[in-house]
Image 1 (tube, helix red, strand yellow):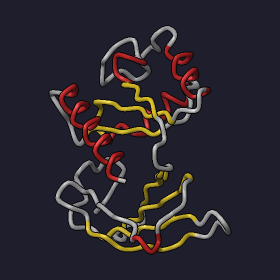
Image 2 (cartoon, helix red, strand yellow):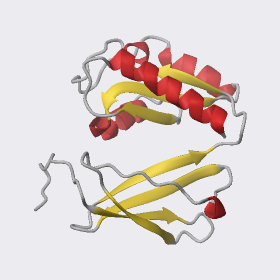
Image 3 (cartoon, one colour):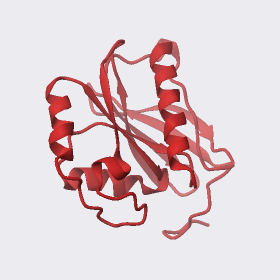
Length: 178
C-alpha cells in the first residue's frame, strides 16, 4: 500500500522507463527494471539506441500504483568544458540541510552566470540526499540560478564533504571514460 507520507523504499518494485521523443512528443517505452533494496533502478541505454547530444525527458512509472518521477538527462559532446559548484555553503550562506530557504551567498548568482556566459556546462553538487531534489531544484529556480546538472549524494550522510569528493571523482572518471 502506498500513500503521500510513505517514505519506505520501493524495493523489488517494477519500474517502467519511458522517454519523451523529441521529434513527435510521444512517450517511448524503453524497458522495465526492478528496484533494489533502496528503491533505486539503474538503466543503461543500449548502444544501438544511443542518443545524440541534447536534453532528454524521462519518466519512471511505478507499476504498482502508477506514480511516477520525471527526470531529465543531458547527453553532452565529448570534451565539453564544465564548471562545478557546491551548493551547500558556497552558493548558500549556510550549510544547513534543514533550512527551507537558505540565504543566497552574496555574488553567487553572478559567479555562476559568468561561467555560463563563457559557454561552460554548469554542474551543481550537494551533500543533501536525493529525497530533497524538489526542494533544491526549486531553490535554484526561485533564486534565478542558471540551469545546470544537479548531483546529490546517495542517502543521508554524516560526512557530506567526503561524499562530495567521491562524487567529483566519479564524475571525473566517467567524463574520461567516454
